[in-house]
Amino acid sequence: MMLSDHIRPDCIKIKLEGRNKAEVIEELVEVLSDARCGCDADTILEAVMKREHDGSTGLEMGVAIPHAKCDAIDRLSIVVGVSKEGVDFASQDGKPSNLFFMMLAPRNESGPHVQAIAKIVKLIKVDGFRKKLLKASTPAEVIEVIRKVEEGED
Amino acid sequence: MNNPIKKILLYVDGSESSITAAQMAIAMTKAHGRQLKVIYVVNENLLTELLKAKIFVEVEKMDYERDLEEDGKRYLNYIVKLAAGKSVNIETVLRKGIVHEEVAREVDEYGADLLIQGELGEVLSLRDSHYEEGERILRKVKCSVMVARDAKKIEKIFEQL
Image (tube, rainbow over all chains, first blue to last red; front, side, top):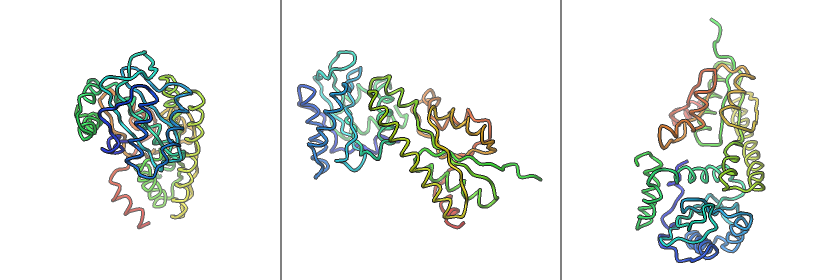
């Protein structure tokens, strides 16, 4: 799976404004809702927050992968958010999170969803990947950084 | 001379390239009267890794496992229909565990002479290639392996059956 094929420029927000977990998740859902007119933002938000309630998706190294299965969307959807300042996301290492990959999939597409999450986990371990994403100044640059790492150019 | 390939095992993972592999396997089976079996493996290992990395919680892992099993059944049914459309009988098996190990086990138990699979997944580095399931299957199984390539050509062959 090429993750960069599933990330649309209008599903990327470079300067997140949220100052805590709830605000960031709301912002990411809003980005998706704006990009996919007609999707039920409230249902998506509820699904993502419910999952966070079961356990934080804030990982180490400033990365968080909020995710959920949700029938309010019809295909695998990925929203990328960047917060230069970082946000307390109850991460595993206790450090602020500044790279967010929100992954949503309908219930009958669990296979691609799991593959996509595993792919993100693999990518964030690649040297320099996170640094380059934080430096990206446009959605197109974000996609290019991801694509290059996926294709082994970086 | 005896036919050196009597039993073919087809490995599918739900990807587009799996369908290409299925078309190739069905075409070979129909053309030469071989036995064909298709395997899908629920990647339990990946789910466990995501659980260990605390990306999944326990209940979520179980939920995804059920979903993947349903996905697998759906893929297998689709391949059966694809084969039936060409009057080819096909057996199915769904396993759970570490993908390459389960495929290798099935190769042994079924007595496959040839394993057919789709294109290998993309890798980020040489080290990464050691963890790609298609690559691991290539290295692990004891029988010969065919990687189905050129989807357009294979589709044409399949349509002409």
